[in-house]
Image (cartoon, rainbow, N blue to C red; front, side, top):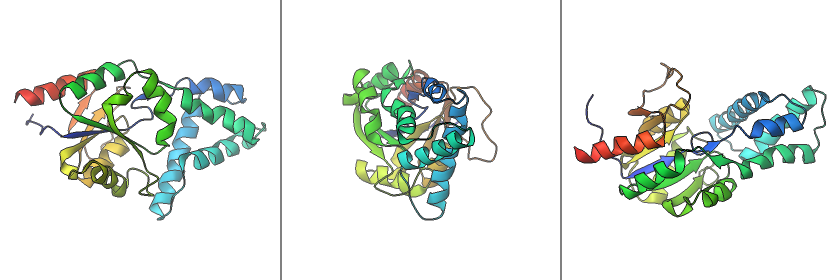
Length: 229
């Protein structure tokens, strides 16, 4: 395998890549939906965000996610009042990090990489999570897609991160669990580092990642190898 150039900036996706969404299942159940509805809801929220971006428009994650959840609740004959929707979605502010994230970010930071986050959600939702894990000081910027007005994987989202960091896109690598995000970043000129947390086949339709590892600890080890070459 050819040597991979070491990036200057790691752009980290947040939802599922850093944060563990599993606790949200209990909130869906409290609202009367089965726990597996979380997966349907998350996929549909991404679908609608992508659709607006493809149409040249924009909607924020909370509004789109709320609309999707309302439709799911109504379809199931359940209470779809704002208090119920808010009770589910407020769980995003109470999520924790995957166990490998804090030590992995510390190692990457110690190796001299600049770390930023870029999410299709709201950057503010993750502040408590990062603070409690003592990783907030490691993050140079915490970005979301409101400013560019385009959801990832639109190239404008990644270009926005590059502009904020003051580097060219080819000096950055996106770290994400989602193949669609890796594909979008690569097409925008970034490297793509895939965290294969679920050990599932990578889709052939997408551009392959430059690097595939199971978690952030393994990513830190791979970056250390880049330094030694």
